[in-house]
Image (cartoon, rainbow over all chains, first blue to last red; front, side):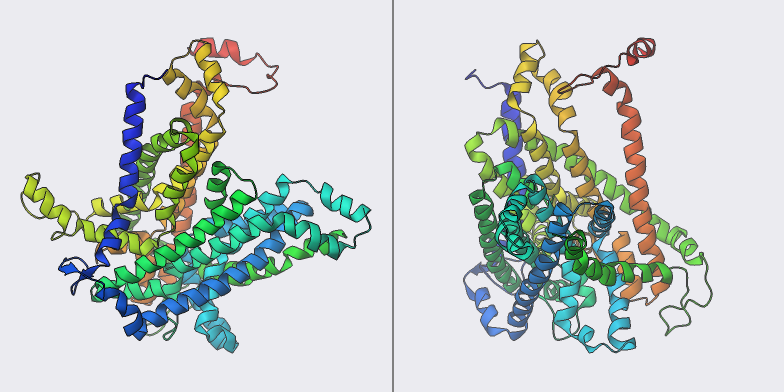
Length: 280
Length: 308
């Protein structure tokens, strides 16, 4: 059995080639961030100048900071709403769960561009026609737009986690005279915790990534990083875009590593982790 | 816990999604029956009609819908053809100790900023870029690479951007097909190709379905890839919708296009599911693989022989 058949060799070569394909543009971006030149596409010489832009250019710094802030708040909102909904679906099943899952399905299959063009006039209605000043705030608008898909993801994750572990522990807790709030806090929440943490970090990265909805709902003054890049696309891409992207990539990888670590601690296999990260 | 108190936990999420998803999308559907009043208005709904849908289906825009569908179907098929062997290799052939690492590697591009990795392709494909000059130096092409800002570049971009969404569910599905089952198939005299097509692949079908849907649905609504790699002209419905809202200021027409996009996506998924069901019907009755309790029916047998 040591002899490798030709089909196995072809399969391995194909696998390696596809991985090279997957990493090609990312490597190009990382290399480009060390380009000292005016334009991203034309290489001049090696240097760290473009990384200084993060400190020297307030527009870039502000955009990154807006993205981080929005990502954090959107992740908190999505995790809170999604966790409660996931627990409700897993522990209090009934006909309503199908309606709710149907709504989540609709949220996850609606193209982002449709959410974007729908939220734009709706926020105008809420903020200007109805005069609710809250909805004119840039961060609030971004958080709303970024949270929609994340609420669905966190709900799926938490539900999947709790459905896998039946409610006997909660019943035992109730039999031992724990009041419902105590059972919720000391039994249900710890059970759901790995999914909650994974959901939080996924929501954060999804929000950092969001370009389409952000481009539509943003107001001037609170431009998040991807929208800044999108507008730079029209005026000419400079190496500092690559540099900041490299920094953001490192941050995202750290967040991803944390998710994988948390899930592995909770006893998931590689396949479980893949399923969780794949959003279902 | 009392039932009503438990169900109330989902209440905040209900409210959030109703206010920020159902209501705005409902408003877009409402707009789509209206019209654009004059140059300065964006929409009006005092006269309701299906005229905007007719307008969105007029030859100029219809070509874009056709192109989007073409890119969507071709992109999904290529993702499946490229991703399936990779997922099988990761789940079955690669050493188990390295599987976690491989999964992590597939996820890195998945979680790199979508826009930035697409820009990476723009840099690679640029006529003055290194790929172009290398290919010219080797003599594979005569002039500068002319792929950027074509439909080919958009297709390459979407395949790249959505490939991880195909590989991950396929990996999970292949991982679930247990090794002993494949060995049993081989012990019973099936070759490795027969084992793959009659045991492994049928059992991995949920993964194939999930992968195809996860790729096709967001791909159809894609806006970024086509903008970055397809150039200013652009030819995806997503761009069309965006331009109606941002530049043309015709919200009624843009809304009708958005609604049509969703309808096209759903219709294609339904037609595709129906086609696959029909095409695989003869194979399924012949190759039926029953795990656990065998079904007690033997009715299908004589029918099959007639069909054969």
